Amino acid sequence: MKYVNEFRNKKLVKSIANKISKIMPPGNINIMEVCGTHTQNFRRFGLDKLLPITLKFIAGPGCPVCVSNQDYIDRAIALAKMKDVIILSFGDMLRVPGTQTSLEKQRAEGSDVRVLYSPWDSLKISRENPGKRIVFLAVGFETTTPTIALTIKAAKKAGLKNLFFHTALKLIPPAMQALVADPKLKINGFLCPGHVSAIIGINPYEFIPKRYKIPCSVTGFEPLDILEGIYLLLQRIVKNKPAVVNQYRRVVTRQGNLKAKKIISEVFGVSDVSWRGLGIISKSGLRIRDEFSQFNAEKELLLHYQPFLPYPACPAGRRQAGAFSRQPKKCRCADILKGLIAPIECPLFSKTCSPDNPIGPCMVSSEGACNAHYKYR
Image 1: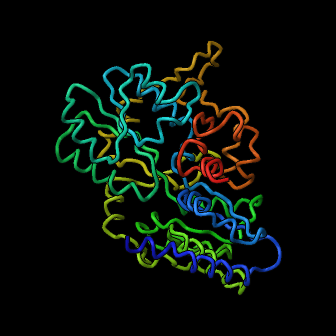
Image 2 (image 1 turned 135 degrees about the horizontal axis):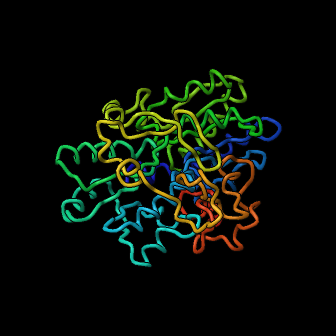
Image 3 (image 1 turned 135 degrees about the vertical axis):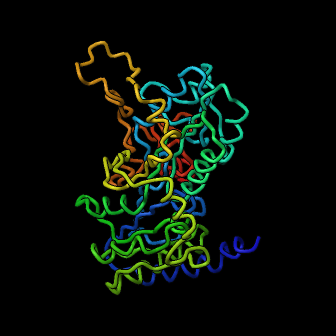
């Protein structure tokens, strides 16, 4: 296939890997891969074996399933338990453990939980099930948000009354700002996500080299893309000239997809949201605007949501949503998402936690750092 095999040429891969080795400065260089696809493909193609051991790669919070807050999972499970509710979701979400159970286990117990490949399919299911309440779990970054926004607009135009969206949509640049502002992290460069950047362009990353003096490379996902992105970053690091470079020029422009950004802004407004492992990040999430609030599951279905966890000693005044959501014991997903530890440093990794029996979300998704390390270590 054109533009796939060309970017997997072994001779060129080895050539650029040698160039990277030649310009490596002394000491460790830490590069964060913001996108989960980079994390997967870097190890899938064995690129780590071609590069100097002093070039360290950190898997950042680039997996939307991994950074979804525990309370979001518990709320989704609470929705699945409601009478006459059909839950629609992308596949990876089903296996993410909640505090007590998962959507996959809830489906086995009789809840109607279905896997979709496109949010657009939710319109058809809503029409086919007029007596049911249909809830789509809208999880993702800027890449998937335009399609979800279009679906909400189409639902309003069609006058659908039984379709709702439980959203956990997040924005990548604010998360990157939270990471570079953390004094515990020593990041020398970012590989920025190609898919996200196809929507938002490269301008939203400009604050990182300007304010924090850290270069960024918007990079594609094939072996040559990734290696060239690394090479461009190292050039900037060696010359001490931080900037945003666009390796993925065949897909990404400076301004991004203007139509997609317009659709997003019509349906969603910016809000503060909680990221698993990173906490609440200002203006890093998207909420459904008031003019589309009839599709907001939080307002329409979860308005009177109470924690369903059996804690008889619940303190008065603490029965708000998510008061008892808890992370799995000994799971270090939070530290892995921040790049503080490698997956193999988690005490559960490959012991009790594996892709067949995931304890934390980083092992669930194919884009999760633990999943990638387990498969390709």
